[in-house]
Image (tube, rainbow, N blue to C red; front, side, top):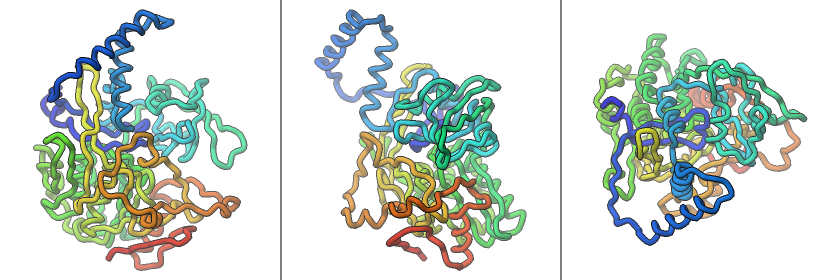
Length: 468
């Protein structure tokens, strides 16, 4: 592994919905025991190990028992700490490069099944008609009921050009839908851009990879070549997160130099850091890819679109731009993943992903298990919310916020609104593609930037706080 690769290992900001898009980075960090080993407890572990080896109904390998023990230690801590076996470690290193074999869907979990958060543009999943909200109940002949997302990923990935059949339950369909796909190399473009409504720039970031910051700079320059935009929309909806350096770089593109973007705080000294809008923190010794940005990028009126699938690195960007009042945040309450993970290799082929700190916005807010509250709440569609994903606070053993809890009365003002039960028989929300025709939230962002009325959707007792 080259020295450059070793430098890229570091903090991770992955969201729950990473699924087939494991948006994470890798780090070579040596771990040294700072406390004495608990000999009595280790002796107890040894006794259990020996009992299983001697008495279990079937023969069990040492490797399986040790791997299971390590995995159990980590998964009992919080939802994001995990043991990475050789296969998972390899996939992680591949995924952060933005290219891998698979189907092209971001997944989460709902009711014990695998749920499609979003199909990725120009992938087998999108071409086969997979839709956001689909519940995958079978992969080939294997039921996904109670299956972990990691196991689901392993089932759906495979050699390129091999077939796989997904059985899905889709809203509005009386019977399960069978979808036949062929695996392919998935080349993820984390940044897309275009001009909407003649003179408003639109940039969508689907996840934070190694090149996301530099790719954003190129797209902003391309928008400038077409004529200086009068306003800008940054779309972070369903972005599950990724590399922290990417989040710092994206934030730095829109903020003055050397502004605090995010800080982290944990027990270890190296877990307590401040990250600034400075190439030292986002370029990591490489050329400053933001050096040639046009001046309007720092000043043009701006809206950031977020939803329940916006997690971690996405929330870092939204929180920083909100704290500095650089942009108006619009959409739904975000996922609420405010913890940071590092990758600690424990062998040449395996590693652990360990939560080491919480992160804080420039104003010192911890969004762990709370998320970012939009300045203007707008439902996913004109008839209600489409994306109903489990948030951080719903996860078993989730890390607490770390700051004083809000009162129930305060919390009621900040929850993502849902349509009332009496609306159940009304028109159901229909899937749409971000940035395309039928994107209700995008249209409301355009209305806001034009000074026109914003339609918040079917929300009762809505609290909107438009920050000037």
